[in-house]
Length: 371
Image (tube, rainbow, N blue to C red; front, top):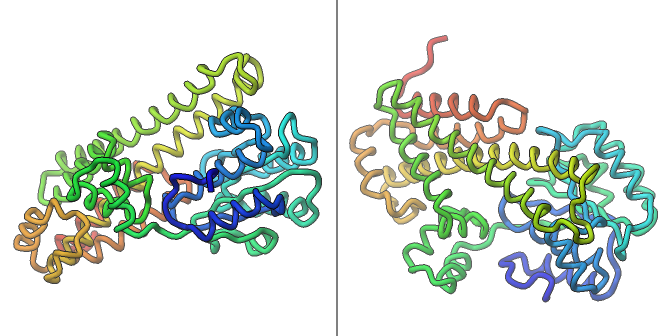
């Protein structure tokens, strides 16, 4: 499976896709569904690049760098993929490939509104030409049944912790560090790699722990801790935008590269959407880390510290348990999980974070908000 070499986990899915590439029996539409960070997006790009390249190594390399005109990812405009975006995809799908063997469109199906989903439905029912659609979703339940039923469903599962930890150890990380990063990654190889190797991710975690344990601090300190998390998320978004634009600037003059005009505008618009998505993703990850932290305090309080993912913070967690023996740590964790879901409703991520921290504090300190 050269196309998918280096990808951990989900071997049955990778084997099926590899078999389709070898046999040429490719479905017109796929739905890759599973939790964030388990490889759906990476596999979609690898599969799409192989499809458009038709065996041309240079074309496949350009596709993997986002520079092939026949491999196109459609990013949501804000929280949703709009009917206008889908209609444009349908229009382009009906035309012949620019230069590749096929045209491939990667779409985020769990961001479709009803109108966008219906706009794609007829094309999925009556496919034309060589277009292949790869739909991504965190859960099959978040995709309309009429869409899901017209695709080949492929479920992606979290990668086992031991497998991720062994992978990080092979990359040269100490065993304790590898286990910690794997636990923080929660089944995502990409997340685990970031916690093992990216300073920005480790700093985000430090900001989260500081905010999570600031429930006894003054209002100014608590507010500052939340602001630090959001500022970190903004930096993540800025870096993602810059990296996306850089590959177009570096590729000027290459086939599929930028040369001014429409392509430039599309690239910059996509970069802005990526910036927002990366920022919101960082806020979601912060909420996930907070939920994991409070869940760990709950298991420490229950006398099972060996189950804690934040193994390097056991003493701090034991101290919080002693200080707040009646705190509802598990309730605080559940509330943060619910707050992550609120990000899908086009609510300000900064406001979601602020409210989530306030609600968690109420659970820990044992008081209810004034009605």
